[in-house]
Image (cartoon, rainbow, N blue to C red; front, side, top):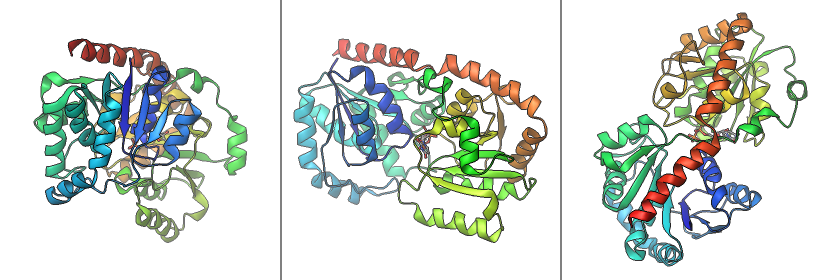
Length: 382
Ligand code: UDP
């Protein structure tokens, strides 16, 4: 099957890392069209997936943008739309991976008469999207898409509540290459020594730096934990949230936690780092659409505490495969950290149960098979 994948971002966020895994089986005949250049292109090239940056004019519509801005952007993007529709004619279907690529892909699908698939990696809620942006996503999907793949039940429910057609949506969780997690590139002592945390209880936080990812909650929680509890923040301000990155550094200074907090920036060897942590904390203050880092921690066999909202609730069974705490609840997070620190023998079997379950539920082969069947159905219905 020849698929034209579309993604607006040059940066490797969760949606892009997920697409990387989905595109691999189609590498002989697919093309990933990006609307901006960046690290994501290099990851695609590393995996020998054909990629082309289709535009050098960034689409300047923010999640909270209004109608006028949206329309003027569409006029500017006419050359991109024409290019995408001419490429689409050489493919069996258009697979859009982000909201802006849905907008371009929908018009291109109309012009090229190719079926459209929308992989929904977002919860279309007020916390994340303006009313107009939610309306655009739902209206275009309802009118043009033959299939919407939601990355969790939570994303599916939000889509339907925003007016999305029930019969369009199938839930497919992200898949992970299980084998990679069995043999990290670096050993635990190697990583801990390099970071100077051999004797510490290490809480890892793996996410781009962004207010709703709640890094500040973990920093605050450290004040309620013993001095040998340290936090590693892995991830960068991918989408221009430099102010928040600075705020976090100020918070660390004000709380005099400089020797207990490390900011490692964007890292590619997540598996070695996660495996070397004693606990992985996910602290999003708004519902997480899926939460790749939660599954990754499980696959590494590291205990995980996540915020009880959105997709995280579908991933973690409290006290069986991890812990859930209410969003923004610093004492509750500190309680879980302190518990895992004091009772490693209790935390370990929970992490092992999570690892076993994650290997079954999120196996990439199974997930890719599921997606392939859905895409075949779309193709055959045309
Ligand atoms: N990630 C990474 N390097 C970093 C920080 C994060 O590769 O320095 C990865 C992380 O392992 C996960 C993804 O980025 O696979 C983030 O996905 P998630 O669903 O947790 O959040 P999103 O970015 O989609 O909101």
